[in-house]
Every structure is written in structure tokens, then in C-alpha cells.
Image (cartoon, rainbow, N blue to C red; front, side, top):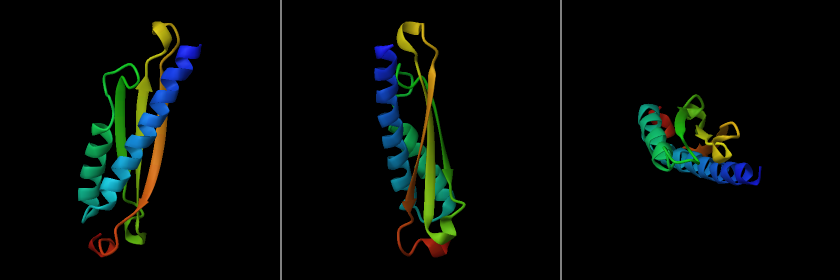
Length: 107
């Protein structure tokens, strides 16, 4: 049981950090389309996909609030359970960043 919590703990911080990095990168983009591509690539690139702490990952970028100055990245990662006995755990984290000043008008 202790190992499961450790794996999940590492996954939570990794996923949160990836969502934050993706949102920051997306906030620097010039258009919603660029924000979506950049935010997703940066978020996924920040994860150790294929490792026990992140067997599979996905990242989505919401630019629904782009015109009001916000972008959100949500990252989901599936972590392996302890010793293959415990079930895999899915961790999802989101991070919202303000779009850099002057770029909102391009949306």
C-alpha cells in the first residue's frame, strides 16, 4: 500500500507540473490554435510517458476563455499500481494561466 501512495504522489506532482508548463507555454502563443498545439506538446513533453509513474498520458488545451484572457491545460496520466497487484491509478490535473497581454485580440 505504501508503494502505491508513493507512485501516486510522484504522478500527482509530475502531472501538475506538466499542466502548469503546458498552460504557461500556451499563454505565450499568438492564437488559440497555436496555444492548443504548443500547450499540448509542452505538457506531454514534461511527462515520463511509458514509465511506471506515467504509463499513458493525454493533454487537452481549452481556449474557450481566450477572448477574456485565459487558457487552461488539463493533463491525465495513468500510473502503474504497486508491483502490478494494485490497480492502475489515473491522475488528472488542470492549470489555468492568463494569456499574455496583447495576444488576446488575436483570438
